[in-house]
Structures are given as C-alpha cells and as structure tokens.
Image (tube, rainbow, N blue to C red):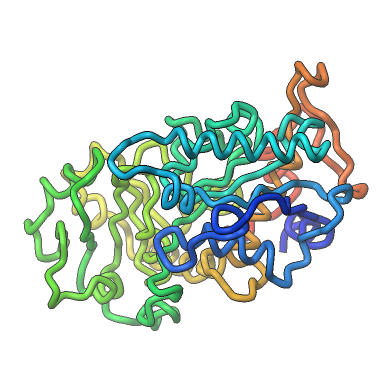
Length: 381
C-alpha cells in the first residue's frame, strides 16, 4: 500500500459540476469501446465512492462531466471532418462554469479535469486554450506527439465491454498452467502506420505466430489470446487499443508496438514488469525477439500480469485499486504538482495545502515525488 494512495483515499475530494444536461453532460457510453468514459462519469456521480464532495470549497479538483463520445454522436455531421461543434461546446461549457463559479478563474483551470476515451477527445479540448494547455486531461488517446503532456495529463486504458460486461472467457484469470501453443497472436484491421508493416511481414507466414487481418467466423479471438504466450498490440489510427487490457485479462503478455504512446498509469506501474515493448523497426524479426525471451523472464512477466490485473478492472460498485481508483490516483498525483501560470501568479509553482498533506517543493516534479516517497502499486522483482 503506497503512502500516496492511502493519502488519496483519506483526503482526496472531487467536486463534480452540476451544470449541463444529459446526454451530453452527466452521461456517457457504458457498452462500447468507449465504456470507460461513461462508467467513470456514472461512478463519479452516482456511485458510493468517498471522493465526491458537494461543497466545492472543500474540493481539490473539479470534474467537468461532459462526454465527447456523445458530442460526436449528436453534434458531428458524418463524413464532414468538422470537429468545430465539439470545440464550441467545450468552450461554452468552460465559459458557463467560469462565469458561475470562481474556481476556474483562480487557476485558469489547472485544478480542473476532463475525461474522454474518444479519439477526438484531444481535439475537443482545443476548444479552450487553458483546458488544452493547463487543465488535467484524462485520455485514452495519449499520444505525446499530438499534445499529450504526461506531466499534467493522464493516460486512460481503453476497455471494450461488449454489452457492458467482460467476455466470459476473460472474466476470471486463466489457470497458471494452461497450455499456450502459440508464440504470439494478432487479428485486426490494417489501418494506421504500424499494422500494415506487421501484416506485411507476418500475416499467414508462420503457424507459431498466427497473424490475421480479420478472423473467420469459425475462429475465436479470445481463445487465440488464451492460447498464446504473447499478444501483439500494435497501434491503429490512434495509439491506444483495447487489446492491451484484454491481453492483461488473458495473461497473454502484451507486446507493445507503438510510437509516442504514454502507457496508462506508467507513473506508478512498471510496464516492463508485465509487458514487452518492441521497436517498429524490429517487426521483421519479431519471432526472433520473442523467442529470445528467457523462460524465467516470461514466468515473471506472467506473475506481473496476475498482480496488475485488478488495476485494469471496471467494478460496479468500484473497489480499491481498480481502474476507477487508479484514474483518481493519477489525477491526485498531477494535482500535487499543479503548475499555475506565471502570468497569473508570477511564480512557477504554487504550494497548495491539501488538508495539511505535504506537497513536494517546487523543484520536485510529481515523478520525483512519487519515486521518493511512495512504493509503486506493484513492482515485481
């Protein structure tokens, strides 16, 4: 149990703005690839969690509960490629809360956060420059080459719940001694810059490494995962993929094939303890790379997967250390290191008192603070 996590559970308070009407605000998808967006909003507003406060004066952060997924559904004109309506809604929402309440203007939004799992979440956040540059943005599309800033933003795991539930084959951890005859597996569309390279070199090339563009109806995706030692997780159009969480559930070691992807919770979880990252240039020799992983290391990677699984599970109601709590913990860490605009306060960092919880000095980033004062949630040796 980490000091930081325990302090979060004891002290952290979140105010949820009540402005706005469903479905765009106070609602979100709960049965799709964007499930985590809706489930977080619902848990924050309707769950029995200890973190929500109805008194904004006792809050550490302020949550803006709008859904970018529902903005796209109701505001976006198909095939127009015009995201202006999304940006306009976000700007209008910030204008409403900043006019009605004093909290946004105190910090220019540095203690506010939004959450979105839609690919266009980052684009929507550009509707207000302070939201984009200053606020905490919690995104599945955590691409550091497209403005995602891990010093203040939070990477959100993409969790695809068909019909609102985890596939029965992945609901419980597989037996530790289950047979895994395949070295690695992938099945998915050829889009984005990385997948075509993977498919070019490995599609239908090696029975030890089954790679498909699409599976035929007589083959089962999750059975392949459960029968494979490694699961290939290449980025598509955007960096995030639900395959990573599904691989964790299947205890199939994720092989991350991505550029510029800031992995979820990587400030507290050692991804190298339960996954492998392979450079795109190494895809042609992927089998050689994976065959070179010693059995002892592979066994430790499997142990790591079993240990971190709980951090990627959506529970209803939420449970300690699950994905809901991990998201809040990441927001908490960034709030500890909240940087206020020098043009507003003429200092680089403002020392804030969180009910007398000590805040790191201005010379220490939250990464250094985390390493120096808290044990990671799980670090396999």
